[in-house]
Image 1: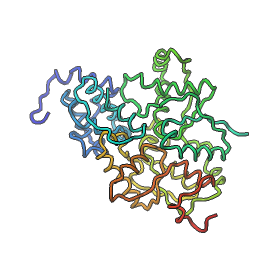
Image 2 (image 1 turned 30 degrees about the vertical axis):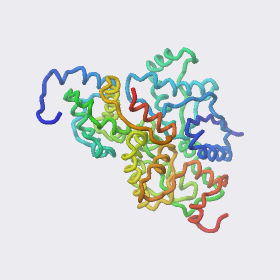
Image 3 (image 1 turned 45 degrees about the vertical axis):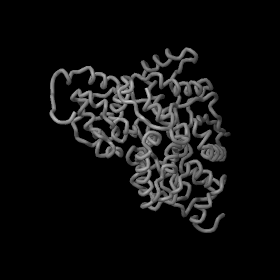
Image 4 (image 1 turned 90 degrees about the vertical axis):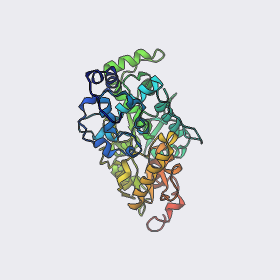
Amino acid sequence: MAGELRLSRETLEAPFVKKVEELSGQNPYACYQCGKCSAGCLFAEHMDFLPNQVLRLVQLGDEAVLWAKAPWVCAACLACAVRCPKGVDIARVMEALRQIALRRGVQPVEFKVDRPYPQIALVGAYRKVTP
Amino acid sequence: MRATLLYFPGCALKDQAKNYERATLSALATLGYEVKELPRWNCCGTVYSLAQDDLMRHVGPVRNLIRAQELGETRVLTLCAMCYNTLSRSALFVQNPENLRRINAFMDDEEDYQGGVRVVHLAQLLLEEIGEEKLSQAVVKPLSGLRFGAYYGCTLLRPKEVAVDHPDRPEVLERIIAALGAEAVAFPERTECCGAYLTVTRPDIVRERVSEILLSAGRAGAQALLTSCPLCKFNLEERRPLGAPKIPVFYLGEALAWALGIEEIPEELRKSLAGVMR
């Protein structure tokens, strides 16, 4: 991902972008990289790529974004979604990336259930991080 | 005449938030409602799926709406903010005729859902139906002298299609607090996420979030926080890092029951009450 940026018709029109578009119901190309999502994201400091950068990688058709930590740090709080001036629901893009990763088995999230949790926490977590 | 009110509890209200259920149901009885629990309710799904192809995840919520429809009811009350969110978003999802057709085709064992059941949160019931005037008239033990921080969290406010108020500048909880005689203090973190289910996978992040929220509430002078989300309450209490302000967290319905004279105000708050205890 880092370093040299290669742009080609093959990646920009790749089935990967189409897949993210379909699963999220969002048009990633509507994003003009203003960064408002990242500015208001409470979890951005723990992400390897900021929310707007995740969206940029999707725009560029870079599948390496499936290995990024950011979608797993996103808590789907929707602060970005209500603030995006272009109406892109970034939380849905994050969900699409989690789903593609889970369905392909590329990124199992590892965690230990180390104490009793209320159902509301466990069901929520398992719904987001298991296929 | 007493108005009947159909009520969807959800898992937390039967478990870690039993006190929220008990307090609220007694308070609603005092306010003239005959509350009836939704028969054969099932899990709301906790978190709403954001993927377009997850039809299956709407089955649970829509089944609950069908339970209400079977009784000829057109609305169902939730106390839990997360249940409110998932149920009302699924109710919106099936407003689209194609989605409704698909979900009905998916469920062989149920009568078809016709649409039209509205999901109502306690905060909406208190303000939009009962109203501040009637609410404050029902108060027998005003909570004057107490300063509450209203902690909305995410699910009452986002997405905006189901928000109980403006997603960035809400005031419904503050208005309820004022109607109960207490002072509502505004604090910047009141609408910000506590980390939710990350408490299982990334407790380190949730501890940071909780610390920020408590510091923000503390700086504003909140003596206690009021919430309607059992997961927020769990995180604010169980993920509070050492050194963060020890601000107690209560449910909205508990404060309601205190003000209506149904339940005792906790010792830790009683000393702050204005004047002599009535």
